[in-house]
Structures are given as C-alpha cells and as structure tokens.
Image (tube, rainbow, N blue to C red; front, side, top):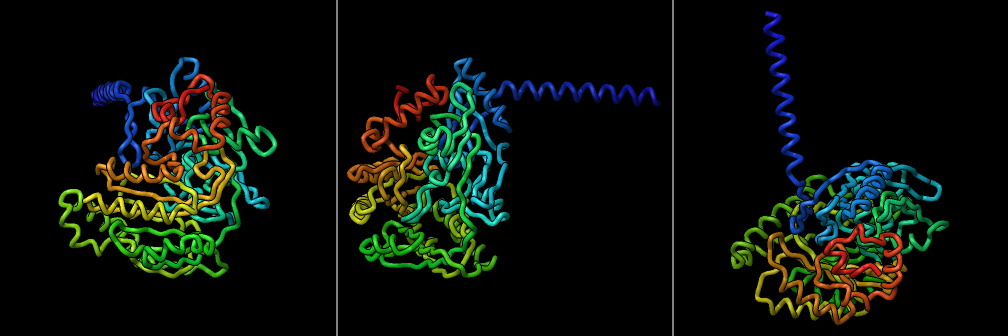
Length: 462
C-alpha cells in the first residue's frame, strides 16, 4: 500500500509539473496587454516588468537601451492620452510605493514614485503633514500626477509638480541622477513636468505643509452671476471651483477655505447617499440610459448629481478628492484667467448648438503661475475649463469644438487629458519650449522614452 501511495504521489507531482510548465509557456506566448483606467488606450508591449527598486529600473533601462528597445513607465494608468503606450518594455511602478524618509522639521517626505496619492495622503496624516493642494481624485501615482502637471484649484497654489523639491531620475541610457536645489537644479526645474519623455522618475522629495482642515461651503448659484464675479470668487477663497451641467442656468459651486476649526464631516450615511449613490451609481445609470435613448434622460435630468448644498469642516485631502467610479473621457484646457468669462460664454453658446444631450458637467478651476517649462501654467495664472463624456461615447465633435474656441486664448491642454494638438501648434504657447527640448536631448539622446504620443506633442529630439 505504501509503495502504491508513492507511485500515485509521484505521478501527481509529475502532472503538476507538466501543468505548471504548460501555464508558463502560455503566459510567455501571450503578450501582456495594458489598458488605461478609462479603457480608451490599449497597447501590447513586448515585455512588462514590475521593478521594486531604482537599481532594477536602471538595469532594465540599460538593457533596453543597449538593444535599441523603447521604454515607457506607467503609474495608475489614469491618463486619458497615449503617453504610457509602447510596443517595447512597459514598466509598472506598483511595487515602488514606499515612503522612504520623513523630515518633520522641514515638512518634507521622500517617496518612491509609484505611491498612489490616496496612500500618500494616509501616510502624511500619520505624521501630521498634508499636500498643499490636490485634484478632485487621488487614484494617480505621484510620478504620473506630476509628469502631466495635474492640479487642483486655488489662485495662490500651483500644480502638484510645484511641490517637488528633489527628484531621482533614470535617464534614457540607464544612468541614475539626483536633482535638488543644490545639485542638478536646472534639471529639477525642467523635469518636474516631463510628460514621460525625459526618463523614469523613481523617487521624489515633496514639500508638504502641516496638516489642515477645510471649511466646505457648497451652493447652487446662477451661472451668469458666477461668470460676472469669477475674479472676485477666485481671489476671495483659498479654493474655488464650479461645475455647470450644459443647458442649466445654475451651477454647483465649491468654496473651500482653510480653518482651525475641528472637523465635522458628513456622517457615513450622508456620504454614502451623496457620494456613492448620487454621484456614482445613479449618475452611471443615467449616462447608460442617455447613451442608448438620449430623449428619455431629459425626464430624469433633475436627479443629476451636483445640486446638493453642504456646509461642514473636513480633513483637507478628504475634501479635495472624491470617489469617482463612473468611467469617462476628459479634455481640459488652461487659459489666462482674465479670459475665463468670455471663453466660457463662447463654450456655452457652442454647446447649445450641438443638438445633443451632454450628461457630464463642465468644470472650472484656477491655479497659480509657475516657472516649470512644460507646465500648463508656465508664466501665467490660469483658469481651467474641463469637459467630459461618458465612456464609449463619441467625443470628437464636442471636444474639437471647445478646443477651437480655447485656441483663440492660447489654450494649453492638460498633458494627461485628450486633445488634438501637436508640437507645431503647441511650441509657440510655451515660452521655454526650447529649454525643455535641450533637457530632453541631454537626458534621452537616443529616444528610449519616445512613443507616438511623445513624437506628436513634443516633436523630434534635437
């Protein structure tokens, strides 16, 4: 009996080994697909890797460079553009998500570039710190958010990249360099917004601030009044923005101001009802109906999210970022802030001529000027107009029409969002375009980090 048991066990072990080998062969033969968060960008890289250290990243890039292989890095995949696509080596930084150092005295943290903003926010709370500003979602990786000049709202606050005071980069040849105020300072100034074209950012030093609360005042107000008083609202609040549903006469307004008051956020039931059910589940259902039967949705349009008023105090990161489970496509443009009322009025008029029901709001925000060459707010205080459509919905006519209007104001598209520009139309809109091009030629002379999107929007390496 013992001998029979050994024979059975040996055969089972043999078959397990055969099955494992067959599975391994199947995985090796299948090229690993990458698909972004919105599902509108897909690629089949020749190889995918998940490094966990800068050395692994440098070794992978060195090997790829020696073979003439292209390389791209992906964070959370939240960009709507093709910035991270490649048919070469695609590296995910999901395993590079640690906080490596906290300097409480100077309010600085050193983090691996793959950490998600949501995870970073929780780590910062533990040490009494916070990001000075955030966008309205926190799914992105730190590296992806800064590379695309992702921003929140606030007339005196720049985009997320302006908080970066140190950076580790692996160049297109596999060399690792550190940049801060004392060494490679000019590379740091440029590389904070790199659109994935300069190298693989592996670590960043972030200038944080002491943790703070925000007094939230959300109202519903006439759109015309908001446009007339746009400058005063932007100047009079730490964080000001509004959301306008096309066709409506009123808009949802958010005025968030810093306060020393203790937090008293909405209860879990209210949060679930408003943020999860209203802004996500119900909103998704309405968009599904609109996509299949556009006429029917007008009967239930009054139930669209965005009209709920609120007044409370909350933790800054929890106020800035909201859960976003409805998938969509987005285009966003920055224009000179003084142009916002006129430009928005033209966008409003254009939408009224479309003859289609737009089911996502137009979002307007503001941000401070900065000195980063490829930042969308380089050299000018900016107002932002963002347009969205539900996933798998045609957007060409809608986005193209808005883009043509904003071109009249030297509009600069958000690097992580959809647009129809190329380097020939963009170069004149950035005073330091050549500075970026020179840094790119220095860090990636052979184009290791090129792809079709980078070639289109940045042009050839010179």
